[in-house]
Image (cartoon, rainbow, N blue to C red):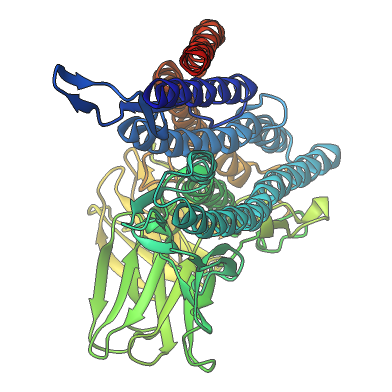
Length: 636
């Protein structure tokens, strides 16, 4: 009777365990990260008799969760990539909407500004046209300021996101460490049986962590997790955590980056090693897309300011004075590394705006050579002698002209990042617009030949101090194909110059051409453009800057450079939109695979309830029969 009773009791216990586990599955059907659990049963050791082995019932070995580590690892990998792409896309779409907007973008204000310049060229003596040109210039500057401010706000938001994300990561790693401790305690008390619910909770936390940063998990023999981020930095080791910190970058104090607390010090993690998750997306957006956009906008502003200033200085205003700077041209920004000697500094400026790129640069000294590196592709130039104004270290129109620097120190140089922020209008008086050329040419009324002299052009800066000194060009008499140039200036007087029709004649910073056949004694003059209020020659040259290729080594105009910038951001946005959707679909597919394996099927569990109920009832019947048989024996 004892064997029958023991067998019935074992079946009753097994049915009860299955009923409890099934009820637990049903109760947690909607619990995030829960894995369906299953009772593992085995037969008890049978009893040998003369007629063979007689079974002794069932034994509940353990309760395990239906879990596939490969799928879990795959979900972590796809989830962290999806979060990075989504974060990058969400941020860059703001930049794309800002720059590509046909109303609030730069194109309308740029067009309006040059419309004003053309109107002055059409009527250079008109004060209303000149005032409209200044107003349009103010609007252009204001639009550049506005665009840069919004990009700077996005940069500030990235700093906030980095702070918030670091707090989220630290909270999750602390919870994982606590669960490591709980798993150790629970499984220690349970003689090694798995604490399924604790494992599920821990895996769910790791999955959440992977949404913020690339996460790798190494399971230890004692059942605890060691968690690593980035390129292998440990943040959880057993029951201990190493918190992250949002700290100012030693290269650029305006940007927050990631630091790892190790003992009493903070180790800065290289940003190029922080991959995956929303944090990786924020940092990659800032380093790749935001910096590119703000540098590109600043480059346009600097180029507008400098090229317009250069041409404006070659003309004269309504008062007869040479043109001043129309805009205040921005200068490069640079930062000394926090590891540098506070006394270390550099002198950096822009030597050629046409050669400017959208990259940042690093200046270092290795103890032997001074090195200037373009960070976008790590192209470098170097010199063994200290850069100076007479012998600068130059790359892409950026030059170092002096430095106080110790070996192994470094500076971050951003030539264009503040271009749109710092550009300003330098002229408010309409009379100060230099629309006229500073010199004019004339042919003597006594000339008998058919030769004509061009209006002349002013050579590029720097201005010649003798630019407006009167000059006379006189052909020999009798005519011998030669002429003399008299007046004040370098190289003057010049005699017995051979006449070549249409050839350039240059003195005192101007260039003219004479065409046709002069006669003996014919004279031409170049003199100051006195009272040239109706002269529009310089205004026409200013207007030509709208379509002139003054950017990217002479390959693009202002509008084309802005169009390329918008196109680049737009293409990147579209690419991220597509890839983020594809990656999100992969996450969904992996989640469905996990759900198919580990998820709770309520229909199946309902059927199991009936099955285990019947098993419970059957085992109860066995016990009842065992009791009845025992009573029958006692009555004999």
